[in-house]
Image (cartoon, rainbow, N blue to C red; front, side, top):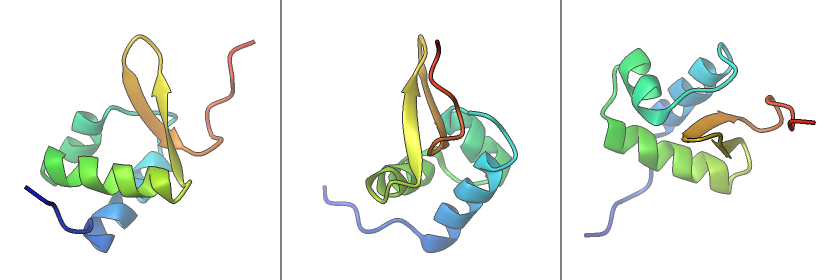
Length: 73
């Protein structure tokens, strides 16, 4: 089943929410912005391809604005 493009409104909500936190899981983002997790996942995927957010693998997967979380030293 082919999904269409992510809703630009959801993408903006994701970016706005991520601007208020260091990092978050996709289910947390979905709960906070009041959207379905599947729609948030699609938006995050597109935002990652646009180099606006990044996936962080810290025992589990988090999402953060690109460059917001510093590399561990």
